[in-house]
Length: 110
Image 1 (cartoon, rainbow, N blue to C red):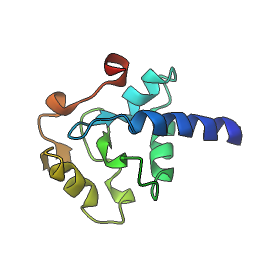
Image 2: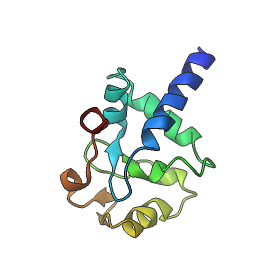
Image 3: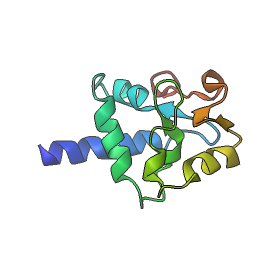
């Protein structure tokens, strides 16, 4: 099971590395793309485990309505919001403004 999880995590990271600058995706969109529709929570666990991996832009992964649900994994700071705003993605009250405009769906884009 641990090897399966590790392999799945690596596949998640491969997708997240492809999220374009200034765009966001969701845990569920990644899970669907990987053929694991009901595994959004596991994608979240993968993102939680990605901190310290500078080549995985975890800040670009939000929940299905654009909430920065992973923000507390950025050291208790507003770093996730700051990183998104640096890329031109506005955030208000921990939610991506105009989420639909910024949303990147790997199933459509890849």
